[in-house]
Structure formats: structure tokens, C-alpha cells
Length: 124
Image (cartoon, rainbow, N blue to C red):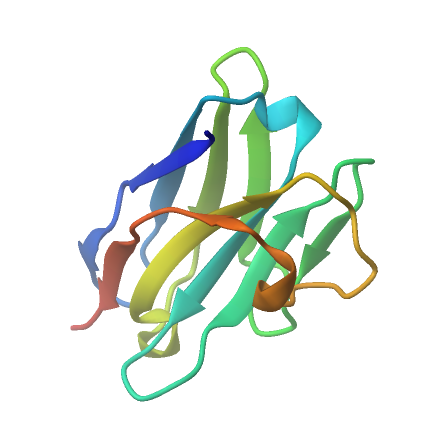
């Protein structure tokens, strides 16, 4: 059974950076499509970034040029580097995994395994 555990969330000021990590157990990050999603209070869960199994990377328009998704196969860990953060980035962030690769990009319904989430707050 694959399990995902996020870490690295916290409170930062606008313009600052954070790096989220997602440790995978019970499976290999190299064999899954992996994604980062977020959910702000009162809003639905939205896709932020994903790395599909065949290597394709997708970003939400709102984070392009600011966020970078990556994975370390040796450490079996997924990362999300978040730069130039703003208040609209405030949300609970989740990592997710699925065995397949879908062209339904950044759709949370595609993903089968979820972490518990880590809170990110951007405020002055």
C-alpha cells in the first residue's frame, strides 16, 4: 500500500519561498505519476503541478514561472519549490499519486492515493 507524507509547509511573507516534500513509502516514485494539489478555504481542490510517469510536467497557469516540481528517485521523494509566493498561494497542499498517465492534466479525480496535507500560509 503506497503512503504519502507531506512536509515543509508553514507561514511565509509575500515574495518569499518554501519547499514542500512528499515522502513515498510502499512504492517507487519512479513508477507513478505524481502531483501537487491545493485547497483554499471554501474552494475546491485544484491542481498545481504534476510529473506524469513518462516525464511530462504540467503546471497551473497561476504558478508557472514561480513553482517547480521535481522528484528524487534515490530518495523516493517528490518536491515542490515555491518562489515569489503571494497571498493567493495560501492553502492546504497535498501530494498525490496514480499508477497511470492521463491527458486529463491536473485533474484531482485522476489521482488515487493522497497524503494528509501540509498547510501553507502567505501573509505579511
